[in-house]
Every structure is written in C-alpha cells, then in structure tokens.
Image: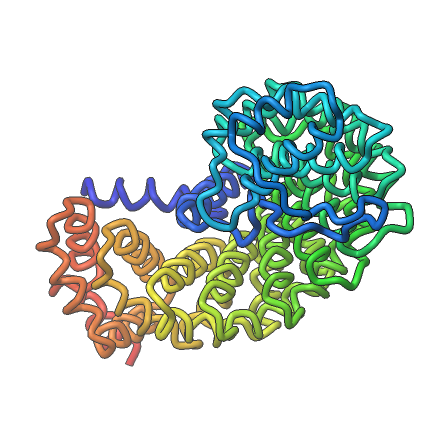
Length: 500
C-alpha cells in the first residue's frame, strides 16, 4: 500500500492532477531547466576584437608597426605627449588582440587601465579614443576579474558618452566594450543599464549605420537582457522591448539571432515577464522564424516560443493561435538532435495544458512524430518525449488517452523501462499505472492488459521489482499486484464470462 501513496503523490505533481495549474507549470519549467542546465546556448557571452572593424579613413594607418618594450609602453601611456600615448596604447591594443594567449593578466597588473580610460575622454583625438576603447574591449573579454578591473578603472561612464561620438568607428567600439562588460553577469549588466545606455543604443538603432555596427548593438542589447539572479528590472525590459521588436523585423541572420536570444532570456523569467514580451505582438514573427533555414536563428526562436508555452494556459494558447503547432511537426523531425530536443520540450509544455490544447496536439498530427522520437530518438530526447507523454496522459480525457494508445505510444514507452535513470523509470511507471486505472469497462481493461503483455511490458515491470531503487521496485510491485496478479486475472475472466 505505501507504493500506492507514492504513486498518487507523484501523479498530483502532473498537470490537472492537483488544483493549482500555475504550480504545475512551475514544476515543469523547473524540471526542464534541470534537464537543459548543462547545455550552453549558441550565443557568446563576450567577444574579442582581433581585427579592426571598418577602420575610419581619418585615422590613417592605425596598424603601423611600432616596437616598444613593456616598460616603454607603461612610460609612454603615463606621459603627456599624446603622440607617444597613442603609440603606447596602440602597442597594448595589439598585445591584447593576439589571437592566441593575449597577455590580459599582465596588462591589468601593469596598472595602465585608469590611464587608458582617461584616453576615452580625448575628444580631440578620436584615433586615441578608438585605440583605448578597443584595448578595454579586449581586456573586458577576459575573466570576471579582468572585466572588474575595467569597471573599477572607471570605464563605463566615458564609454557610454562615446555612444554620442561623431566617429562611427569609435562609437561602435564603445558599444562592443559595453557589451563585454554587460555580458560578465547581472552586477555589471545593471551598472551599464543604470548609466542610461538604453536610450542611447535606441537612438543608434534608429539612425542609418553600417550593418556590422547594427549587429554589435543588437548583441550588446541581448547581453543587457541576459543573466538572472536577478533578472533585468521590469522598467528596463519595457525600455528594450520596442527596440527588440524593431530588430526582429530585420532580415540579417546575425541580428535576428541575437534578437531572438534576447527575447529568450526575457521569457525565462516569471509569467508576468512573459506577458510583457507576448503583449508586444511578436509571436507570429517568432513562429515564422521557427521555419528559418538558418540554425542560428531557428534555435533561439524555438527556445523563446518554448519558454512562452511554459507560461500560463492563456500564453500557451496565444502561441498556438500564432501557428506554432503547425511548425512543430517538422522541427520534431529536424536533422539536428538539439532542435528535436527543444521542439519536444516545447511540445511537452503544450501537453501540460487543458484538454482543448491537448486536442490541438492531436489535430495537428503531433502524436506520430512523438512516438517516433520516443522510439528512435537519442536518450536525452526520449526523456523529453517521456515527459510529454506524462503531461498528455494526466491531463487528457479518456477518448484522448485512447487516441494516444492507438498511436502506438505504449511500445516505445515500455522499452524505456530499461533506462539508466530511476527518475525516468518512475514517471513511466506512473503513466502506466494511471492508464490502467482509466478504463471503465472490464473488457477495455482486459484488452489494455493484453496489449501491455504482448509488448513485453509485464516482463519488464516484473523485473523492476528487483530494481535497486526502492521507489521503482515498490511502484513496479504495485502495478503487478493491482493489475496483473492472478486475482485480477480471475476478476476480469469472471466479468467477461458474465457478459457472454
């Protein structure tokens, strides 16, 4: 009997087995984050500038070779002759721009950062400003300690001021440096935000600038959306969303990718934050981008929509109304396993909805690809598919359950009883136990038991009675005693005889 209590308690955690739908959603989101926590997204936190981006002709040959020792560099940086300051700063920039093993630690320890920050304010010498901004960009691309050295050197205020520089090249490099600082974590992100950077970035987006510059701005904006504990403040999000919505209409794949990543970060938060994004009307465009042939665009677009359907039932319905279920079948069969996994995760969140949303899954013919993934997918995808079945099963009507069984789900599901993780075995046993409790007629129950037996399910469940995990062994024992014992068989046989 204790196994019955364990099973019932576990079933209450699934969609529509308890009273609070929002709690069930939160549990599903928490689990999905656990399943995905080891996978980093495709977007870089920080970027180093190795080659000069669109050099300003007014700067002349900024890559002219000047050979200086470290002592000469330090002396030159701290001198008063701006021509020598320029040469010394340029020498540092070249050192920190090496493709391999740049001496960032050595430069930080040399103590030159505050002086380089001063050069950012040299408005009459844009070439020196550019070299200083480029140097700080690459130092801030290093470790958190190296980024902190840039921040403590006072770099953020003058970098923000450079967003109004008449030199596009200087301005772009300042954007890049701020993006690296913001990408370090929530602390520096919020310091950058508090420097009134968003209106200035918005003004740049609205102007006519080169595509490479717009890409850097978009990436920096995405870093201002990134990180949690805490998430960006609500007012900050409201400031950024109009810019992101504008950028989402662009055709450049890099801009679209970083914009979608930004929206994915914003939709990882609470339902109220998801609402801020959804209420902008971006869902149809996000669904459109889920059909992109560019993997770098498809991935964050799918992630964002997956986050949205992890929200409230109303938010899920908005995604369904925007057409996400029409796109999902092809993504479940995508050649890339990472896309299959993300699509299955999104599907599992829709399956956690009410019965009319579960019916939408059936109507859009999503059960066959689900069965296929459960049967043939990589193990990490099979786990997501199993959770989809759990959510579907515990929220479905008897008729919807019949359609699920008719789709051929039981065979692949039973095969996963040999999975290496006790947690997955337990949820499958819970599903089987629940399915076996649903039939109202003894004849339907008998047919279901026979089907499970024909699929080798009884042998697999019996074997699990000896599993090293006590919860697994108890759950398996309960299913056998409740549904496949001799007493149960006799009851079914007697009932069938009485109907003849």
